[in-house]
Length: 307
Image (cartoon, rainbow, N blue to C red; front, side, top):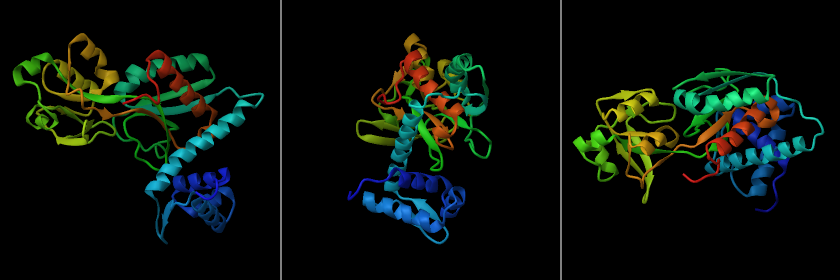
């Protein structure tokens, strides 16, 4: 690295990644495309890395560019937060905040947190929708998505608010009848209850184990698009499930379910996902910061905790 990157160049780069076009950013900021291109070139020179692949028809982010983008978003948010922290007066968040989450997490984990948020900020109006499907955050008009699992959209900003993982489990009744799986690949011969919920691949489980990531193709007579349904079926002894620890933890602790193959787990952290930087919206910023503190204090989760 020859020089340290300028904050303003990082802002230009993040804006280009989100818009996926130089022209849109130029219009938004009131500058020419040449200026945008120059700033990106200076940033690439400072970092000594290629950030974008540019053609006449398409703009894509390189693998190293994606790393820079994720880091830059956090750096810019920290800088903006610092400026806000030294401001004498901070406006109390108010108005409507539309947010979404998956049904199980939304009901059991997010709803109590939002109740406490509403009590603290009475001028804030919260509209929560629970959706067990991929969500077009911008197209559907949501300002915030509280999501369990992977964030794939490069044009959105994400902040991890709680650590979490998915684990394998089944009821003692099922295991007495079908036996314990000896390893991950043995799951292919068991009744596995698959689910299509947000980020999960239907019938394909990828877990991290002692040798790294392993994939197994699973199937079974029962499937659903709702995690709480398959959780109930698992307790009834109908098969093996892959579910978040926040969901099945109490069932495992009570003995209703048995944790299988504990050396394997699937990373599924809880993320706050939003289309614009937190500094642009007091409502979103306050909500995200509140949720980070809530999950840390109420449930013992930490955003940077281990899988």
